[in-house]
Image (cartoon, rainbow, N blue to C red):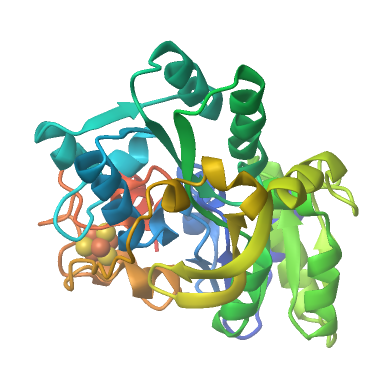
Amino acid sequence: MNKAREIIDAYQGPKLRIMEVCGTHTHEIFRLGIRSLLPENIEVISGPGCPVCVTPVDFIDEAIYLAQEHHCTITTFGDLVRVPGTQASLAQARADGAQVKVVYSPLDSVDYAQKHPDEEVVFLSIGFETTTPADLLTIAKAQALGLTNFSLLTANKTMPGAYEAMKDSCDAFLYPGHVHTIIGTGICEKMKEEGVSGVIAGFTAKELLTAIALIVKKSQEAAPYFVNAYPRVVTDEGSPKGQAIIAKYTESVDAMWRGIGVIPGSGLALKDDYAAFDARKKYQVPAMHGHANPACRCGEILRGQIKPYECPLFGKVCTRDHPVGACMVSSEGTCAAYYLYGGQK
Ligand code: SF4
């Protein structure tokens, strides 16, 4: 770790912008105080790696529609409950009588559906390659149990499209170790061939500092680079099992990312074979045309263009207790990290 610190401290080159594309990295880098250790000419910016943050407002509106119009029971992880939709959050909808249950694992939703056969249960499935396989395995469990009262409302996304969309926003990516555990390193090699540099990082202080030091060192060489600095977990081929689950149940679709827009091929929709488990098809959910609070600047934050403290609402109107935007709601959100750990650049 000392060697990594020496490399970082000795950096005299031009401003180096490193984008961490992972909500867990965002929080670990803050929690460990790594930002405050970096010299002025090394900047870590947060990218679109918080699944709750990039989930569009329409998705919340769809969930509320299902709860209110079809009287579905919505099951979800806690963060999504407080994300504002166009008119309300799921928490507000629940206060108005909607059935919204917080679960701690996707399979809890299937258990709930089994125990409540008189309810129509819809699980909100969001996230990246890391968590998507576990969400999809709920379908296998529901099929095995013969359940017809369980479905998924999906907004799952894949990372490679985000790398393409964000590649001009930074000098190098700090690639998310969790995601590459599933998808392997092929996309990083491909990005290198396109001239985009990056290092896959783990999550401990030593792993993060080592990855940043590698970026600093390699950036002083002329060629684009890629290094897997998390080899104890990430292999070149990734997880064939995880990839097979995703390929079995889903197909690629264009996806809307909050603050970024539509990224071609970056979403996962359930295949027609599983239409009975697709809440959008099962309940013929109409197209939503929602919009976020116009004062919220999550979009610019997710593109690495501004820091949360540059949003006029940060820490005043928008706090952890009263979040205005998804980036403050989510435990992986950038605004939440600045709010919780403050005082770092
Ligand atoms: Fe949105 Fe709040 Fe972040 Fe401002 S501080 S960008 S309002 S989440």
